[in-house]
Length: 353
Ligand code: TXA
Ligand code: MG
Image 1 (cartoon, rainbow, N blue to C red):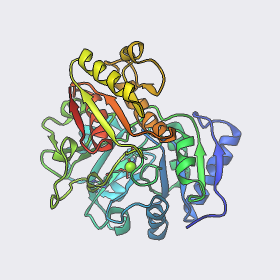
Image 2 (tube, rainbow, N blue to C red; image 1 turned 180 degrees about the horizontal axis):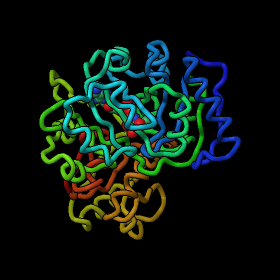
Image 3 (cartoon, protein in one colour; image 1 turned 90 degrees about the vertical axis):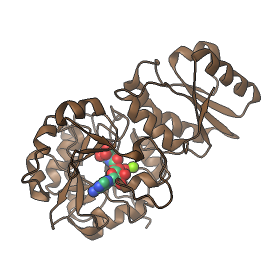
Image 4 (cartoon, helix red, strand yellow; image 1 turned 180 degrees about the vertical axis):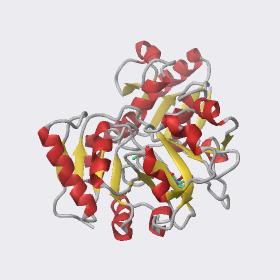
């Protein structure tokens, strides 16, 4: 579907000017009339439609080129509304993760019948998220309905962390793009299933595994977080089985002692046609040409913030043959989420040097 018109509406990150309020009211009306609206959140930008309207929700799949069997998560303005859409009675885990809401976490719960099958791809469960971004919050409040929203990228591409990425992928395919600043976290939300016992981490994100364990006690980690799905495996988070986050050029993750990694990367630079994503500490040795600094080695929050944008930028470089990413062995905190996205972006190509 090619829409005649995509309205790009600029909006300030605080969503508090008169223009902001007018633009948000326009976007919310578009949702209620069955249209599609891209909006900023603290994780990544989302591509939203009325989750109670099957036709509107179906148009999300069309705009993104998303496989129909990959379910959408729903977005609400308040955790108090979760029980309208999910059967939460008797779920002892939900109250324990409520302190993380609003925020970068999605809880998978048993869905109620009002959530159409097209949204959940026929699953009995639904993912629910309450974003903390002021624009997302104000927009969702005005919509007055749950908003189904995947990340606002074409299926398979890195998730969008600024309005430019959304415009590049979806201009002409959606009704409205609310264009604000950069997403703060930069990686999609942590997904935790609360319908398993113990709860299961399905996708790591801004709320870390350690934080979840602190709140929930024991937390299982889905095998899809760190290992490749084999043919025939059933995905717990269905999206895990698809090609993800990949730029056009093959990506290789490089790990090892710093000196050895640097020597390897310099060799690759000499061969040419490669781009390098590395730590700030590496830049003095590698120079700045075709080199993206993703932050100091210990600064996982900055890696999370920059990684998708850096991967996307490589698509602009002509005649590129490979992208090398210096990664750390540390899997604690936000490192786990960054590593998970890089594993998928690289199709599990790790070079141990
Ligand atoms: O931060 C985010 O979560 C962003 C922003 C826009 O909120 N959204 C997002 O949506 O990343 P999406 O569709 O790109 O990723 C959601 C993931 C998919 O991998 C999907 O398969 C999985 O959640 N998922 C959705 N519903 C599920 C369910 N009921 N059970 C297990 N996994 C589910
Ligand atoms: Mg996505």
